[in-house]
Image (tube, rainbow, N blue to C red; front, side, top):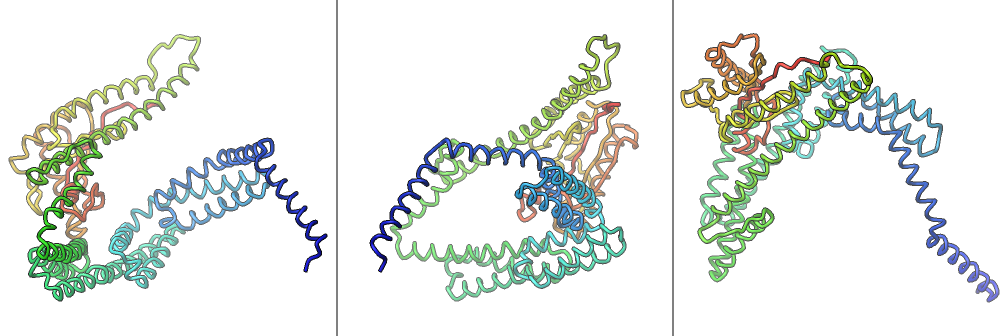
Length: 504
């Protein structure tokens, strides 16, 4: 047992410590300086690491860790060393040296990704397709082998060995395609057949025959596509994913129909419950959902509202970019005028002329927007360029023939071009991901050439002012996994480059 005297001494010590800690926590004269010191330290670090952090984010955005691993890893080593030194309170100049080194390596990594995106393009696409199919999870061994080969290719390219990089890239592409195939079979085919077996056991055919038949047809079509087009898995993957969904859908519908059959009093409650999600979505958009004649009316109202919001968002994005460009030029103009303060400017500067030219482009852009209906074209602006995305221009399947029904739309394109005297133009052709990469690239080029030839024949502009480029499926603007997304990706874009004199 502890003697009573020592126990009292211990209790006194505990009381004093408790009192001290309470004073410490409650006294602002003690806490405030500590908080202030921590805030000041964070401010110093933010300022010190600002440039390095900016380059780190840029490197991540272009996937430099994947496409330029040597430079990126070296940059991260210097960055992390600088961070450790700062935490230990070491010399700031030494920390700055390490941060400058990290910025230099991040810059090299960012630059190196440009070459990698061209040299390793096929393996990059194969990797993305395999990842989308779930290869890291469903084909982990083959995925790891492919990643290793891809990493070798990227490192060899960084080291200047382009030929070996291409060889490793081909090996990586093959492995990624194998991993994708394994993943599609494991993630979609096996799961779907298991679901269809379950559906058979539960007699789903009796309650949801249409949905079940759709799932069966889709999985059969997916297997057929995969067997006939071994190296073009886009269609097979899409069909397999849809088949899995429809199989799950059929099982769900079957269970609901069984429940309603066994208890018909539930039917009204069920139908009312199906209205709730759409009603909630409508309410968030300030629309009153009404279902007296079904879902169509409210669905159309919501769709129209979403379209308006998307249009508004596009406008705001373009306006923001334009305002930032204007601000940059105005700041430059202010600096220029300050240098000339006290004298008379004999002639307009190159900057002033360029600002006037850009104001004219803004007015021309507004005029182009008025030419097209939303169903014909979406007009966008990127810096000084005006992009006319011809959503209303369609071609026969697999062909590049311009049909008579499109002549009116192309006439409007000519009107838009005429607003920009001496401009140059780029006609871009794009496809969805269905079909082989080579055929899509060829078809997109043919369609871009067809539009280009039409403009040359009907406008009489010199061929030197017009360029036609086919990008195939490489630049999607929507999800290729949906019918609507693929329709958006099949497009022609006419980019008008105004004739603006550059600053000297």
